[in-house]
Image 1 (cartoon, rainbow, N blue to C red):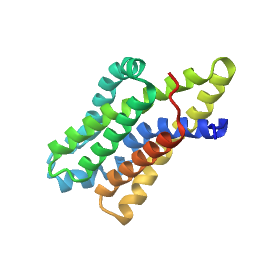
Image 2: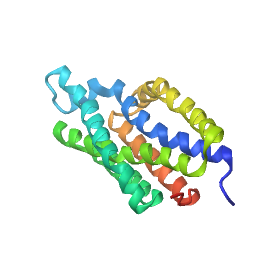
Image 3: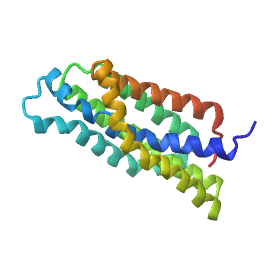
Length: 187
């Protein structure tokens, strides 16, 4: 059956939330990450965020034109698969440098769902309906950074910090499966 409006908005919101979750869910674990990976300077721990954001910024420069050339679905699938693979690499990172590299790769990969989601909305809707979809999705997107640190804190109460990246892996794979099953090519 074709995707309805509510499911479409939910998928768009879920894809947009992927980036916000990846940034904010691991904030409560920065101290544990530093201790586990022998990061002496507390300020260096913030590199986990910087590496991700640098990758995300760099990825946005190319993803739009790549998805215009090869289609939304295939580029989105590659981005989500790479996002999940990078989250796995974060989960098993043996050193802080390896974690930084994996986070940068995850940032590059997360540019795909963020950029392509906006393109998909523009492909499917225009005018007031497009504004409605984006405003509903942005409501979720804005709520995620508020909730994500609490989710991260809950995870580290019951599991080691690496479980946060396992959660990101699961979420990336869940979004990959949902889009693979329900999102048509919109280009």
